[in-house]
Length: 202
Image 1 (spheres, one colour):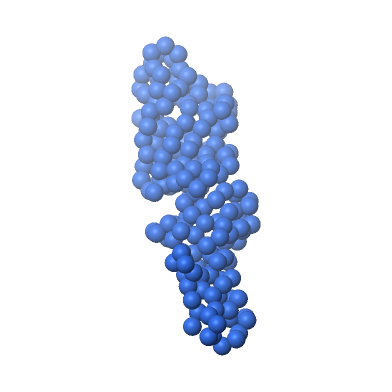
Image 2: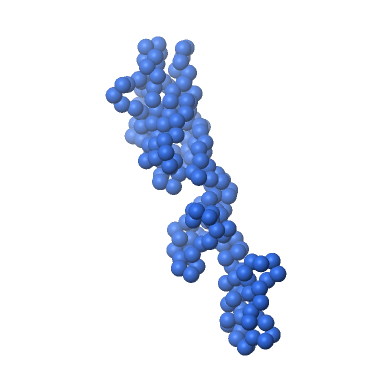
C-alpha cells in the first residue's frame, strides 16, 4: 500500500511490499507533485482548457500565465486571484474620448484593480454639465468589473472655483463622469478628468 509524504501534502510513493508496477508508482508521484508546483500555461484560456475533470483546479494551486505575465492562486471560492501585478492595459475608451496624459489604463493587482491616467475629449471640446446625460469615458472588460457600482470624486482641470467631478464605475463596466452644475456657469466645462482609483474584485 503506498505511503504518504512526511508533510501531509498527499504525495504518495510505493512501499516495498507493493506489487511492482513502475507506471503506477511513478504516476502517483508525478501527479501528486505537479499540481503543487507553479504550473505554466500560455494564457488563461490554455489554463482553463488544461485544468478540467480530474485535473480541475483546487484551492491553493498556483499558476503562471505567459501571455498575461502574472502569477495567480486558486481561492476557496473557485476563483483565480492575481498574486503579482499584471501589465497595464490600455483603457478601452468610449467614442470621442482619448488620453490626456498618464497613459490611461487598468491592471489587476492581488484581487484589486488599479486605474491610472487622465482623459479628455478628442475633438478638443470640454466636459460640460447635463441633467439629461452623463459622460461615458470607457467600458472595462468583464474580468475587471466591480460587482456593484463604485463612486469617487476626482481631480479635473477646470479653472477657478471647481476642481472635482464624480466618477461612477458600474457593474457593466461603464466608467461614467458626472459634471458639477457649476462647471458650465463659471468656466465652460472641464478640460480633462483624472481617473486614478483602486477597487476590490473580492
